[in-house]
Image 1 (tube, one colour):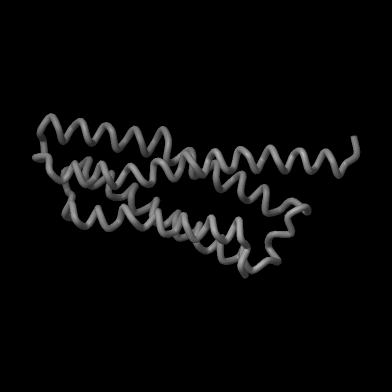
Image 2 (spheres, rainbow, N blue to C red):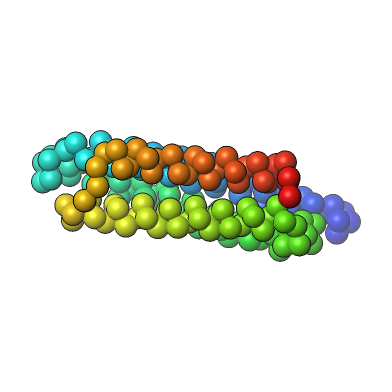
Length: 151
C-alpha cells in the first residue's frame, strides 16, 4: 500500500472519530443547560435537586469532558496532517476561533455544575434557556465553515 493511500486511510479514521466525538460533545452541551433550567425549579437540598446534581455531574464527567478532549485531540491531529493544510486556510482559522469559544462555553457550564452542586446557583431558568442556544449557534457556524469553507 502506498504511503498516500495509508495516510488517506488514517485521515478518514481520525475524521470519523472526530465527528463521533463532536456529536457526543454537542449532545452534552445541548442537554446540560436544559438540566440547569429544570434544576432551577427544584428547592435546594431537596431530593429532586440532589438528583439533578448527580445527573449534571455524571453528564459532565462521563460524556461532555471526555468528548471535548477527544474533539481537541482528534481535531488537532487532523489539522496537522499534510493532507489537510488546515492552518493556512481562513475557514479553518475562523472555525478554530469558534471551537475555542465553544470550549469557553464548556468551561462556563462546568462552573455552573459546581455552583449547583454547592447550592450556590444565582441564575434564573430564563438565563439558562438563553445559554442553551449558544452552543447551537456556534455549532451551526462551525459546521458551515467545515463543510462549505466559505472563507
